[in-house]
Structures are given as C-alpha cells and as structure tokens.
Amino acid sequence: MAYNVVITGVGGQGVLVASQIIATAAIAQGMNVRIGETHGMAQRGGSVIAHVRFGPDVHGSIIPEGQGDILLGFEPVEAARYLEFMRQGAHAIVNTHPVVPVSVSAGTAVYPSRAELETALSVRVVPHFIDATALAVEAGNTIASNTVMVGAFARAAEATRIPLGHDDLLAAVEKRVPERFAELNRKAFEKGYSAIAL
Image (cartoon, rainbow, N blue to C red):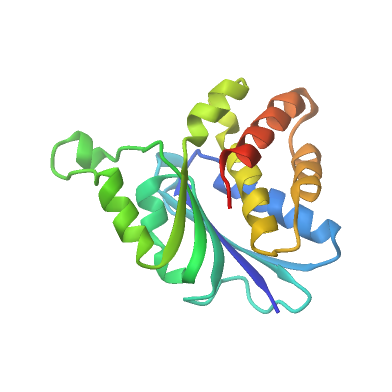
C-alpha cells in the first residue's frame, strides 16, 4: 500500500522543498519513501511537479494516473494541469494566489476565473482554497507560503487517514529549514494547519 501526494506549482514556490519535508516526516515514521520530480523550467517560473509516495510497500517514484490521494496546488492553474494523477474524490489544497504567465501578461491568453478553476477541479477532486501567500505574509515572509501549504496538508492528512499528522510534519519542517527561519516557518505551518476545515 502507498499513500500518494502530488505537489505542483511554478519554479521558485518551494514545491521541491515541500516534497522533501513530507518525505522526511514519512521516513521518520519508518515508512518507505519515493520522490519523483519534474523541474521543467523551474528557474524561470515554469511548471514544476513532485510526486511523493510513502507507505509500507512503495514501488516506483511516479504516481500512476488516478491514484493520487492529496493534491497540493501552489498555483491554481498548475493544480488543474495535473488532475489526471488524482483519484476521484481526492482532496486538493489550492493556493488562490496566481502566478500570471507571460502569455497572459502579453495579452495572448486569458487567466481563468476562480469559478472556472473550481469547476474544472471539482470534476475530479474536492478543492479547498486558501490564500497561502497572504498567510505567509502574516507569518512574516511570503517565502514561507510553501510551509503554509505543508501545514494545510497536515490537516488534510489527518482528515483522510494518511498516517502523518501535525507533530510529524512540524518536526520535519523544523529539521529541514535553517534555524534562523525556524520561528517564521512554525508560524506559517500553524496558519496553514488552521486554514482549512475537513
């Protein structure tokens, strides 16, 4: 059996760090862990996806289509882009703060509305929207938005019987981030944890 988490966003949002935090928490619980990452144009704001698989019996680092348990969408359109990995009725935590692509800025494309994104997501998953970027600012720095998302994941994991909880994931955050940013990340984690109700 494997638990499957899809994390997606754009380069610079901390997708890969979040995947490492979740993996660290799972390893600490004695689980086998596999991570698959696609960096794409990560350094230029391009699409990034990480697959995190953990449990007593894990084979392969890429989640098979239709088997994802929780989706963490650090950017709304990127959350919708990878729905094929999610099982029907899975939960998705989506940061509402958009990263507008160059095509939209140039006027050659239109960024979808919140209603359009919610409709697209709801076909397959149960979406939970939070402004992780604003919550990170409240915690002290927008750079901690990925930790807000990990905190929200902790709440979703508990509600969906994934065997990682608040204390497991907070300990992994504290292990992964530099000590000088520990308090910022603790605050960001707690804000994410309190941001959704499942």
